[in-house]
Length: 379
Ligand SMILES: *Cc1c(COP(=O)(O)O)cnc(C)c1O
Image (cartoon, rainbow, N blue to C red; front, top):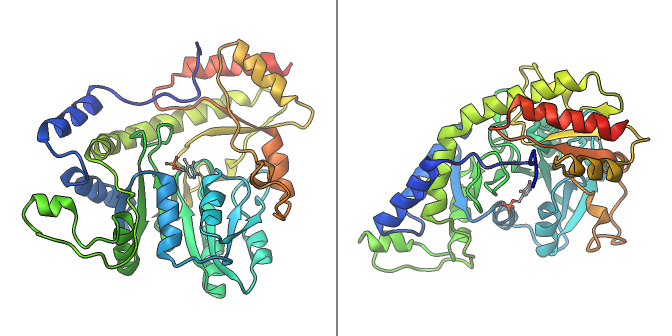
């Protein structure tokens, strides 16, 4: 149906073989493949992080808040231009989400200045999201956390390859959360990873992931344990071996896939130069050694006069799929009129944002198709 899809899986026989091997091995729940996936992901992140693989990115965020001891009425500062999982997990714990605005029309990440304005004596944590895999201004954010003694959770769902001043996104806060959902840079269908540099938190996270139990069925299968105790309440947020095996293959492919994404984004940017009405965010991060973005998506900001709905329809007619990242959280029925503060820059960006197709196997000819359709739709 689409000439150019928003996203395409980067899968081949290698993924199929990896899943087949797990099935043939006779052990499909969390075991050796998961241990390997966790240690390979730790290598990618570096900084001596501990890694805890989980069933999805939302589970990762939920576990992060639980491990940090967030309780009802604690205030958590989050961006308003983010995926809804961030506010959902805060609300599911009965905690209070406090929304902070974007920094500017060039930097769509959460504004450190606005974070500081929103801090109160009830603030317990800041949850940031590296939009599109473009790192947040971490020096400023870490300074705030230190000054006000706040926990920092990084929603790094877009940022499994991103670095800020040489350090991986997800490894700078207390806990980092990754998603391996289908359309993420590293896809396994449903999967996620929690990372932390704290041994204490890692231990808590492991208990929370698996019913608070002291041993896994894998240890009992291997004869390493006979029984188990439950030392705290917990959940079942485990990943399975098929997903972990897919994750390992996807990790092998990541550097090449990231290179392709970068080449495509540079091609987009070069060619967009001669289309009026289009603005590109985060340009300050390109060719700047302080930042290594993961190019998770390719977002553009339309000039105010452009009718976005009409443009999306016109792109669709040309076979080009596009998307919006994101409606601001205040717009959803669940969060409308719930006393959340306004975030004017985020709202303006959200109303004019358009995400164009981007995936590692995309060709430059496909970039041209997208841009021809875009030109046509705007004029
Ligand atoms: C995908 C995503 C999540 C949630 O991850 P799931 O694996 O789909 O649960 C959270 N935050 C952001 C920014 C995301 O893009």
